[in-house]
Image (cartoon, helix red, strand yellow):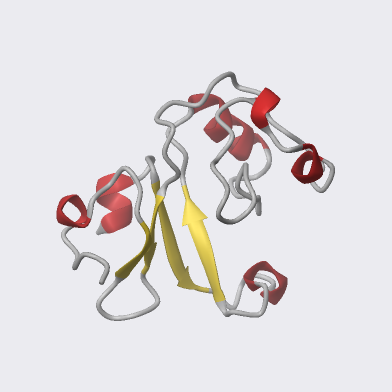
Length: 124
């Protein structure tokens, strides 16, 4: 339901890894974050690459996200193969992250979509 109602958009859903996907995607956790960006250029690039990509966020954990290529930390840019420059990203807040591998789903990171908007329990 969350995917149908809020994707594409500022939502990342953590789900159990499908047996059809390589375990390396999970960093040993057995789950993977799934996101469909609301940015048309990003979705077009993803489609051109076959429909899905394993990518990193535009920041290190705990750091603010880059909203334009010029804000991307050099240390992060050096660790990736490609940076897609589609101009300044809208919003400014990192996506809301919801762990759907547990019942009930829980928010792991607050973002633009509130618990009330998502219809789930707020984080404690």
